[in-house]
Amino acid sequence: MPYATREEASEVYPEYLQLLDDTISDEVYFYHCPKLNDCNRCTDYENRPQICRDFPDNPLSILPESCGFYQWRQQVQPVALMLHATLEILNYYRDKIPQSTSS
Image (cartoon, rainbow, N blue to C red):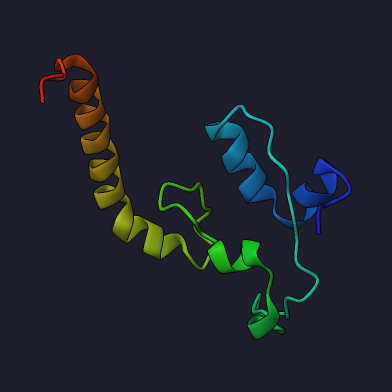
């Protein structure tokens, strides 16, 4: 569920909003789950929506240290960055190398 205002989200998770403010300039939408228990665990895990099933969908996501996926992100981010850079290099050269049109 989306928070009604940015201020409401900031009251719940001020360090995360500050992290986003310090890191990106794009507009961000904030959501919360009414099914989390006091330990931030899903009380309806088997029926969770797709957005929850996919999160985090990117090891380059901005996650605060208090996020349960933060340690995972720290472990896989170097490999994800290397793969992303490799893909950028391959795409660059693919666009620069003339393609043969002969059959």
